[in-house]
Image (cartoon, rainbow over all chains, first blue to last red):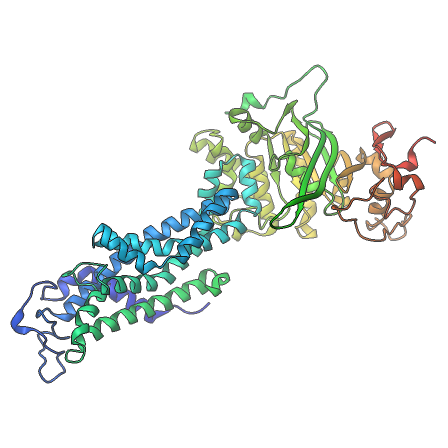
Length: 274
Length: 337
């Protein structure tokens, strides 16, 4: 067994800590504007000030504060969309694999269709029709995720349902629903947890991309993707506006992927090709 | 409680516990992807009939692929028959609904070959054993817990084992857990599909003796599916030998082992190691493979490998007939001239 990935755990722990305790970690507000202090660089630059450690944006808001609050947005969006997308995928995967037959063919064609769909385009469409907001974002990212979950879980269920303990459950008199819940579900949870962690990175990137494109969290709520977008126009004069949230995204995604790899190797070496 | 429902029916003609009548299971096989045409049937079970009396053991013997496991799946209602009937206490078991189905499920249980595959790895042993009781609403929680402890002790395990997971046990212990879960609902018939063949030789005898003890104390009947004749001889009252989906010879166990008639049974027996190296009987070594079940030979299905094949074996299928009382054989060698 590979040893615990301490670096990943530390960074993830730090992010969760920041998300929860953001209001106590910084004296500034992520939203209130202080126009006289606008566009200050980080403190190590000549014109920087230790009052704003990582500088300020065009409205004079502290970048570090917005990064901390942004972690909160990222985590909430990630958790909700994985819950929605993963949950739907898990349910469909189990039903499709276990019940089989026509239902299986129908659901798997739906999965194929979902894979061919341009997800970002669809999310933009949703944002236009439903309006920007957390719910739209969660639905959009959930739609992007469920098919991948469903396909892999279904494969797992196909193998599981041939096992003798499923036949014995029938002999014991279990209903099909009971078999799915008490025998199939607990045995795909490992795979499910691995899929969840491996998808965290993808969800954070999706959230950032959608916010960058203006289909995500509406301003002025700080979101990392939104911060990158806002700083884009000033990239030559105020590099910290885009670069710092960009670094945050990269670091967190990388960290979650490393953690997911570790978890996969630990729980289910069969999934190595995922 | 299902106590009242498990009373055996005592009809005037003393109906056996299980009656299997002309049971057939065909699996169609098809050719083509766009235009699918049915090419034929794989006759996994083809016109099989037998009975099991309450508290007795029938051994179903044969090579792998002869249909013995399919037969057991049909008896367990895990497969639908293509034809024929399976009657438990005089009532057909296929197509049961609601209460009758639950009643049947409580009466017929199973232990499978591989103890590593037959226990849910994510379920505590206590829950595995209690499952049949929980789904049939057998009693209150404390009654069920009490029954689980009783069962664990009965199969030679300890009450505290109920809280452990299957991976903490050895193969023999796992098979005991599987047996306990089969016994939970006080069944009248347990299908034993190769119950000891996955176990170490050293613990096979223990398991077989446990099964026999339980049969005596619970008056439960067994349908024992096996390929190991030593197990069959030790465990059964009646033996049916299957070849390519059909029963070719059936007799009470002692009778069968004393006067083997069918050439296939003889070949099976001669493949068993004798009790003593000097006691070598007539040796029959079968040549060739079992024919493909998709392409059954005409006449007697065994004629392609039979060392005593007669001309009529190629053209006529022998019927199962009684040659001495209670000893039935399907072979032209014993037909009247």
